[in-house]
Amino acid sequence: MKLLQKLMIDCETSAHYCDKAQYNEATGMERIQLKIHILFCKICKSHTIRNSKLTSACNKASLATMPKTDKEALRAKLNKEMSK
Amino acid sequence: MSNHIIDPTKWVDRYSDYLYNFTIVRVNDHEVAQDLISETFLAGLKSAKNFKGEASERTWLISILKRKIIDHYRKTNSNKGKAEVRMQYSSEDSEGDWLEERVKDPFDKTAEDTIENTELGDAIYNCLDLLPSKQSTIFKMKTIDNFDTEAICNEFNITPSNLWVIIHRARTSLATCLEKNWL
Image 1: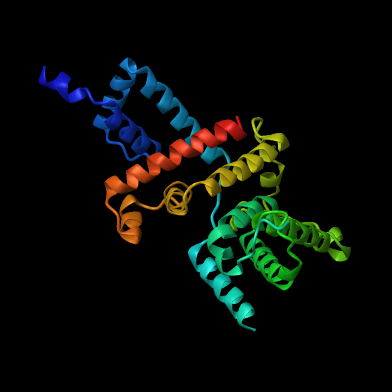
Image 2 (image 1 turned 30 degrees about the vertical axis):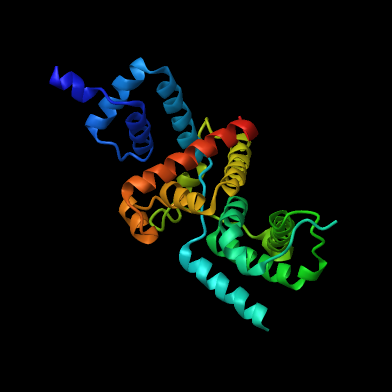
């Protein structure tokens, strides 16, 4: 009975574990709890599917950001040019 | 009527990631991308007085950047560049290994996929622009740059629970926006 109680989580916790799972930061136990929760909760199930779709879209698009050091160099260059 | 105003002091914070992503998928070279963005900003600064405010600042910068990218390809394809045979080896050890060059492209990756992924990247960045700046920065650090939760928390002086709330809000807004504009 205690184990069953431990395995059951609410929707808010499930959303949190779902986010963590997208970054591979959810523990094994959290993954099991999430899977059990979405077996019974349709809303969380659709949220999980949607969230996973977003993750695969981000991976597929192979997004890139400008490295911080390059940003600083660019900022300095721009400031220098503006002060002329 | 001019609706948009120009503010070069915010360009790096606001547009550098978007422009970088836009450029890197088109030129596939970090140094070249960096140079093109730098040239774009400087050209923008020079012609700031010509900015009519009809388009947004970002659209205006992108139109300058597009010209720069076209110029870059024109330059590399001119004269001697055209006649050069460029060999790309997967590593230094495989230099001269012609078999490496003969391996066919994977079945599941086509030119259409590449174009689609480039457009998807642009769509994600467009949606990221609609988020509050803190949410967007944290999402980018966590999702694109793969920073540790702890590192982001230290940088923004927030707790891990705060971080996950921000990530959750960003992901929800982003999913909604992409459903409207992409799917």
